[in-house]
Length: 79
Image 1 (tube, rainbow, N blue to C red):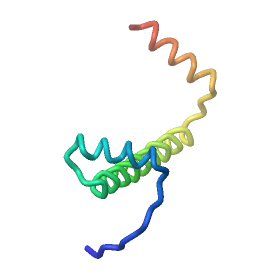
Image 2: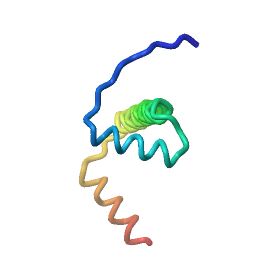
Image 3: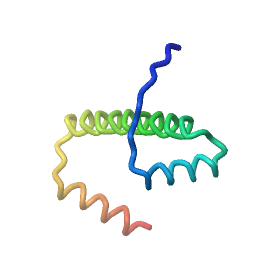
Image 4: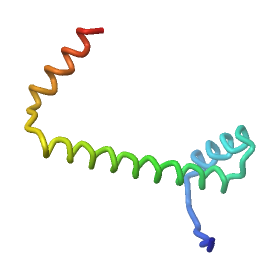
């Protein structure tokens, strides 16, 4: 895998927080930031998939906001 180097600038307080967490996790600053970015990208992709799924489902049905609220109330009342 090819590697690209980038430079980042953070305020000092954020760097202290990054260093503290990295130290507690036995990671380097670089590894912590790398892991965080990978996690962020993964979550954004998953959220995009969920939105697409919801759009697909909603395009096949004609639900109103009131229908959704009614279903939520029914579900909560059944608990």
